[in-house]
Length: 390
Image (cartoon, rainbow, N blue to C red; front, top):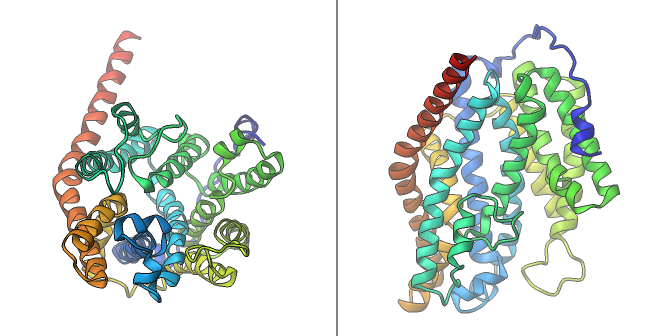
């Protein structure tokens, strides 16, 4: 099923939203819910971070030797940290559905651009500078490649990545585009989100049958189940439990665990960084869906600590800078100054969290809102000119 086929599906007339709103969705409980999500965000980011520092083979370039030798116990557990990405995607489906409710397509676009790009540009500049200063850890890209990276479209352009983790941003961007075209454009409603979830699930299955690079790129057959599960969980949060919605979540979990197992488990692997148990993979994927489901049902309202909000604000910049810049920090601390491996490991995480706070404080907070206001002002000006010309 192609995107054009999906676009021809008629959109039903929105039905009045008369379902009772459960206690978990009341306005006075929004901070609790958001803090619980912030806690899951930082947990997912730390999972990926631990994987990149102690569970990924390429980290040997930074440590000077295999992390398996440095961290015999931690390295095996760290290999499962890669599944933090799946948790991110489930959270993203939940949050995007929540934040786009009642917004226009323009508002949705401006909020995503102002949220993603300022910190991303800062991370590109910092990582490029580090590559130039210490090319023995990571070789710098050519200037033309770095400039393409500023668009966040380097993957479809076939250009090398400045940030190792930015492949997930391309996945997120395609999710935003699909959701904007088929749901946000005409207004987010319960019925439209459900139809979108069902059609996207079927499209993903058919894309696997077609096995064509273009359909895979558009439909994201492997990543779609996690976003779809998050979307359905937000509807459960907003409208209450529903057999159809839980069916969508269950189907997404079943398809998602299959993809995760086939992608991350190799029974013939000889590398210690690929020796994962399919049962542990299933357990972690189940945790990702169950944790967001607990938020949707209001079971995590007790997680109302203020530090979670602060931690959630650091998640995105920390995720952007932690991998490559963390490797530079590891190389300097451990190989050049001889700092003990475990101290280096903890110190690097703290350094990356500090850098994330600086990016949030000096880049995201001042420039994100300014960029959003500038785009809104420009859109209003163009709209006024069009009306005047008419």
